[in-house]
Image (cartoon, rainbow, N blue to C red):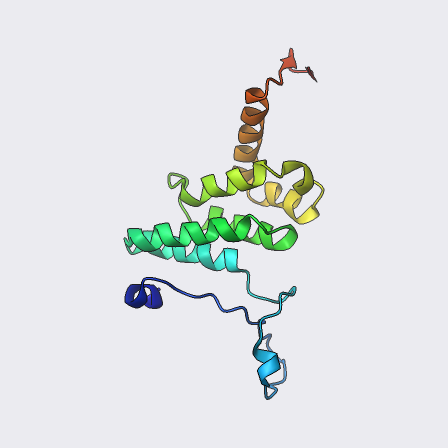
Length: 157
């Protein structure tokens, strides 16, 4: 947040997380290059945290900046990283703040068919019930705009 206040931007450096007990190893230039892997920092989570801090400390420009960065990151996320980003967005912001939540719903409803095959994403609907309910509402609304109806609630026509 301090970086943003001084420079009106912030960077999320893609470094691998250091776990307790990991040996400290002298790094080379090749080690410093970011490589996406399972232990890398989830940028969606970082942007959601920045959004929550901007809301808490009343910095609207940071809030908008982090929302746009969040939007660009989660559009390409799947599996565990997407689930973590969505959970962070829903657990760090109040229900009345639709900023990140609407971004999440817009991104996930357009890829719902692929996401429902993902166990981490499916578990997310159980772990964050508000998200599961809102995703259901948004998906039904999208189907209705495409002319899909239900015959007495039992079958799609």
